[in-house]
Image 1: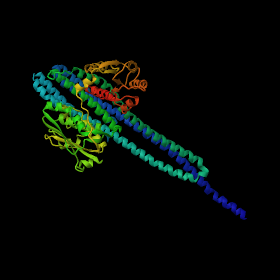
Image 2: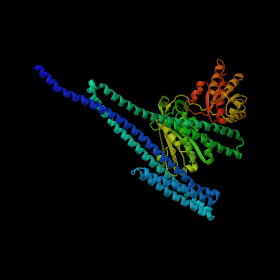
Image 3: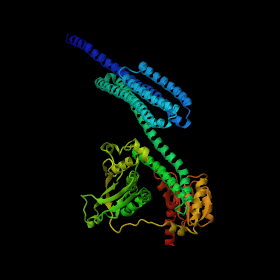
Image 4: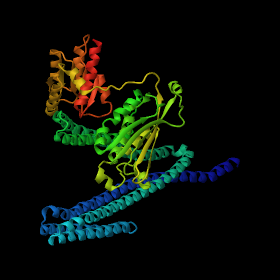
Length: 640
């Protein structure tokens, strides 16, 4: 009887166990279904994001075509001043305007048809602004045509500036349209991010279900394991997709930097020929009118070189690859060297350029002279450029918190330097001061038209000062001149001040006279001009077109110095230098100076590793080539 009661009790409990089994099975199924659904939603979210981005990208391309059509509408109003053919230019205007209107109407219809109601109004408003601005510009163009028809060319010329302003209004309206497109795209991206966040909340639900299933792992462990592994795999795929997108963005940034480096190399090579040609055309008679033209060409070439350097520096700064060195240098001598090239230019304009260094400023400091010089030259260049007459002063002093006793400086205190460049130029309004240090920004559009420039100099100076843990600012008033200042800290370097060598051109010619130089250069133009320039300085020049010929020439002849290009056919400059150094083992080494249009990071270190003694970046000039040869030939002569 007792055994029967026991069996009856176990039979009564069994259904409750079955219910638990069913519950665990249901939880298992739910977990799998939720995981699969989440995977589908994540993938769909990604696909929708890509499709939406592509759609708005195509729409932005169509709007960009509007700018090209607007330019075509604007062209007849300008071209009529050259052609004086009002009929032909009127026909061009009508054709271009019809094409523009057709594209604008198509864009408006496409927005009304495909864009969501909440997003269409800003686009339609921008399209209406474009149409109004275009009508105003066309009205000015027709007015100009009317003046030409009535033989009033002078009055037509007076209206040209108004037409240009109207065209600028069209461009601004187009820019607002592009801005509206970008805003909508960003909003869509934000929506996708929020959706992804909501899906992530569902992941927490899966975790909860997994925890419940672990309690029944004895019966359903294998099923739970597969569900969790499936969810983890899908999550990993999503992370991998995001990682891949990040890698593509990094690759695009690397490609941009590489493109700038390649373009700089390709531009520096012909620019080197231009610099050398200008040096060869320089005449000893300073009163010759042609020398003024050569000076203008040289100034323009230097401006182009500086633009290339600025673009590369900006790319390095944005990529976080800018490096700073810490070497001992002569602060006073460096400042004189930096300002010296601007003195003739300032004197020509009737501007006095002076340096004032406070007595307590030490001559020898430790820091990065290259970046310091870049900041100073950017400020001095702007001061001379924007000053029509009057003084420009570069003042260097110690900040108020710095000890004034020179003995304390010698004991190793930091040099708290303040550099100020004061001019008497056009000055700045408060609004201009607030944005003058932004990339590609100048005071206003008229500044670029009158003085030129890209608006990069001050932006690079601001970033360099920031990276060197300094401070940059400006005090200015409209029409009352400006004072750009920056604070930097250098390490004090005791001992005697350093000497910056300043050799006269005639002295360099005497040192090079009779010296035998091997010039290794694959570019025929640069090879011919550099050899001719060295010949004018009295050197005996042998030439080689590649590294293999250079190795043979160095083995057969004795040279006082070798100028070695890097990128050459047959054998590059690195391999040629290594072979020359291998042959010279145990013998006196000839100085080898690299000539290169490459400006990639680490190029100087590669030259030293190959056995070269120095590096000269293209474009080169007579003075730079003579200076580096003088330095190494004199050193060799002193050691003999």
